[in-house]
Structure formats: structure tokens, C-alpha cells
Length: 184
Image (tube, rainbow, N blue to C red):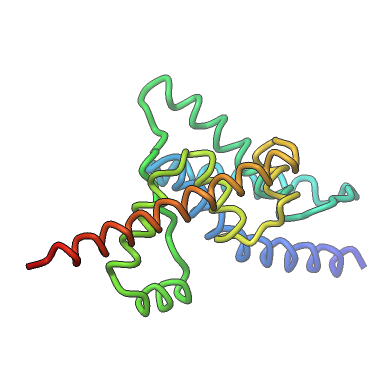
């Protein structure tokens, strides 16, 4: 009977690893370019999950719990490593999934570039909230947990982010229209 439980634990652990490894890696690239640091952080989180597998702990949201754990470990390692060098990458752009790349391929390069430039106009906290909400599909409550802020603050960050994106994208279109009207 113990072998069945252990095998079930291994299967569940393997499923978790396959589900979250790329997500954590992609999320970690938001904060550092140091691939080894990201991978070490991922391994530490999964080692902790494995070591705590026998303890029955009720988790309200698995996504926010795992992302919060990873974020905590990664920031701890970045802080340790930052004593030697600066690792935070403000210019990070998330790696898109295959589906997102196909969709992006259908959008003209010009539109995609405008969106990319509009995203750069957001603060790092706004970009992180957008990434977690739209790229990772976390709920507002889960984003709040990961960012260690209130749900109300998450709604405010998202509203401001979307408003900034809307303004920056509209301004880009207005500039194009003006440029075309001045074309000889």
C-alpha cells in the first residue's frame, strides 16, 4: 500500500513539475537573465514541495501558492547574488507560448511593435501584474497573493495598466493618422 501512495505522489509531483517548470522559468526571466539562478530557484521550490508532500496542508489556490513560493525563493537568491552584481532586468519581455506566437504572427509586425512599446511604458509592477493575470491566467486574488498586496490594490494596478495601454496605443494610432495626413 505504501508503494501505491509513493507512486501516486511521484506521478503528482511529475505532473506539477511539468506544469510549472516553464511557467516559473518564464516568470523568473522577468527578474533576472541568470538562467542558473532561475533553475536553482525552481529546483528549490520543487524540492520543498517534495519534502512537504506528506503533510496535509489545505491551499486555497495552488497557482498563487506555487507562484508565491517561487517568487520568494527567487527574490531571496537574487538578493544574495545582487551583492556581487545587479541581476534584475527591467527590460524583460515574457516568452510567449506557441499558441501566442502563432496569434502574434497573425498580427502585423507594426501592431505588435506598438503593443510592445506600450508595455514598456508601464511600471515594472504593472508589467508583472499584467504578466500574471493575462499570460499565466491567474485570478485577481491569486495575483494579489503573489504580489503580496490586497485584491483591491490588484484591481487598481490592473485598471491603471490597462488605461495606460489604451492611452499609449490610441496615441500611436493618432500619430500614424497625423503622419499620413501630412504625407505629400
